[in-house]
Length: 108
Image (cartoon, rainbow, N blue to C red; front, side, top):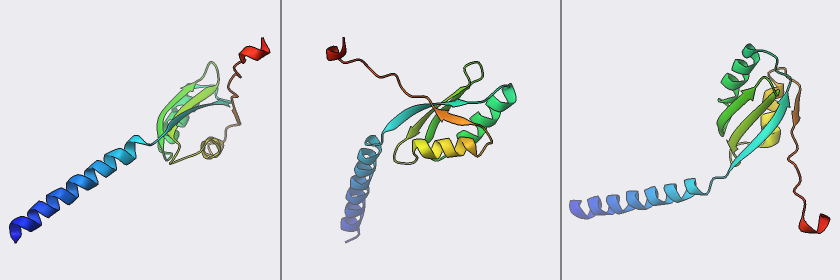
């Protein structure tokens, strides 16, 4: 009886582990760029420090010269609007950088 319970526990834990790995592979990472009015090294450090604690954020790159913040995040954990609000809560003016539209072959 004990051996049956042990085998059953091993089979169940193996199945749960496989399901957990499958679920993780379906997570989507999105990268977004914001214009943020940063002007010094302290601003950069503040943004990079605080934004790493936002849910789903995988990477933060603050660039003082271009005054941009590039964030990669899991779309199941956060949204572009949520990240924008998080940056605004640090007392920065924030705007989303619109990606360049690709020209289709019919627009040539």
